[in-house]
Length: 95
Image (tube, rainbow, N blue to C red):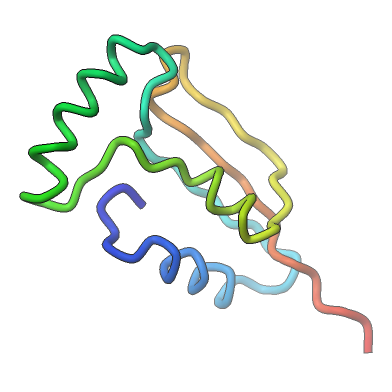
């Protein structure tokens, strides 16, 4: 997700193609929870963002929460550089 230009559209497409109640798994490098490393990442973003569209500051967990998806599992590495998110798509309403 860190290098996808329209991450909102990408997430919407993932949710669309996964069966109702299905699982979407995301893993990404993100802004560190350790401020010195986060500062370094911000500097790197200034170069890699415009050159190759690669960003560290993005946080997939925020996007899935904003869409109202059920977060089943959320983990980050010790320095918070890698984030894993498992979300469940909405179940189809009973007809």
